[in-house]
Length: 242
Image (cartoon, rainbow, N blue to C red; front, top):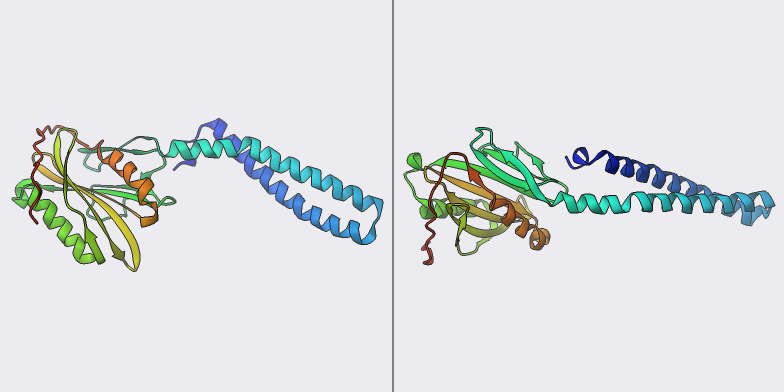
């Protein structure tokens, strides 16, 4: 998880921030009480207490701001750095994901690897099939898988396939949108031909997060590798027939 990967210095700063903010909140509540008392009784003691609590509250929030906000901002920026290498259960598939992602084996029971960031609604699974068993090449595979996905979506829509290259592998990508359990979802689906296998790199998020998240998904997909397999890329330049 993100917090577990922070340096000791960052963890200490966030601890100080949390404690300071909690103290600041508690003293602020006491300040309000003291202010009411000072205005009602108009005694010197309550006026002094009111002033002291105000100063302490500002000081506590100031400490929280100085120590915490820069570290929190740094943490959020570092969470998107794509440098965390994940390997599938078989040890054959490898992909590099953001630091803020963690493995999520329950995303899909058929997946070789699942990962994502729950707070940011970013999810990805890798699903690999044997090309020999399927007796199928990349284009019909992509059409078949995406067609099956479309059947599960309410008000689903699909973009045209885009031929691309991932490492040395030929790939096809498309965008899908629709509702799942009455929740709007947007998918980035990439089918990859690795020579002896066909792999889905399926990523999804909420529509409101697409603009920022899809470029991240593309960066992640570009790092996909299969150990011991090299397949010359031969993407088709012609439009695909559905």
